Image (tube, rainbow, N blue to C red):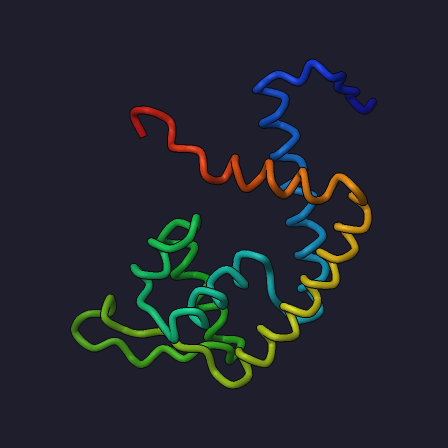
Length: 149
């Protein structure tokens, strides 16, 4: 049975609402990316590589919410799909710069288009609530970390 929340949303239920919205967004985007043989996590890596004109595993990991193992596995998966190049590691694998291939750039643009269409549809679903929601999410994203982090 669906849980109905009233206007007395607590901090904890706000967290659950944001988490549930994020899960819904990820599921929708992953479904859109599936025909391209991509996922949202892989696209995070693609965007980082594309935006930096390359990067090492450590640089990519530092710039995303993915842990080091997930970034390394994602780079391997993208490499197997022919979307990134990764020169053979020499003495220091950390210094290996990962770059998008032409095929990777093409798929990234196709994925961008699919995600943009989804965002436009989602914006339509929100109607007049879109701008206030975006403003609230931007404020939440800029909140300082929890003391002790």
